[in-house]
Picture 1 (cartoon, rainbow, N blue to C red):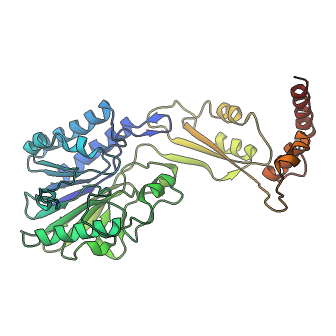
Picture 2 (picture 1 turned 90 degrees about the vertical axis):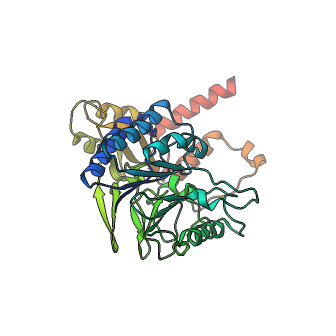
Picture 3 (picture 1 turned 30 degrees about the horizontal axis):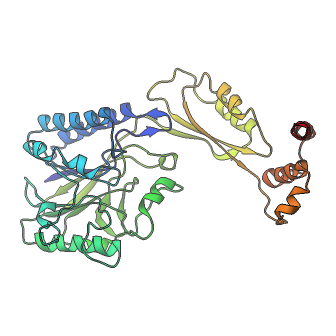
Length: 395
């Protein structure tokens, strides 16, 4: 049996002010080719199909067109989809009865039986090529068996599911949209860090060693979890932030015969992400680096660019100078970030009453020194501030 594992498509994502429809279409076209070329029996999509619980009509059209086309081209293909934390579980699962006609199973909601227990049978999908899949969507608080912590509850759910399914035909495969203990997030990726949280990490020990493969979503970097080679994140097919620009995109191809073998299929993302420079430098040096960028027309595949500037004093015309330098360059500017030299020693606490007696210019000069690390504020800036202060006092 051949399986492709993918996750975290985030259809509909805007990268700053730029939409990514064309990029996602390139990925979906590539994925269809891989499924056909490798004669895949089962496609696993482990959550975050959409970037928002209220995806645009365009994003939904892209998703359903892909499902229709890939099942038409591969008559024996089975697809199992689970919801992620970015998805609306109910919205994703709603067309389930229709999609089942195309051998597509969608699991978004954890349902309970009349006695209040979790409907374990509803989370187990028979695999057409043989075996069963524990198809578990992103688990929200309260969707797991009674436990002291979230992590304990999720772990308990997977163990109960395994016990329920272990006597069925093998192989057993599991899916999840979660943060596994021992996995790595992208460096400085604030969005990923706030999503996963530190207290919700799930131990790899939650998955029985008799499970042939565990297909995970949630983290955008492709990786195995600790020393468990068969517990894997497929990673996102497109970098979702500049923190992910060095990730290697693709999907996992799993072959299960007497044993499980895993191969990485690399997807070359059509749009590159460029940080110029990697470490903030003075404006003059950055402008020189911009000169080295290729000239040309901007298109939907032009690289996304972030500019990093190191400032020692205010630069009111910063953005104008950068935009002027980029006028002929075939890149799309997303953001300009700046850092400054700061002083933290010798700071004092001033009361409100004392503040009223201080000349505003003195405060401005102190702030300038603390923020930019210079000896003093430039004279032209002092003169301008004095003029403004006088006009305020007069009025």
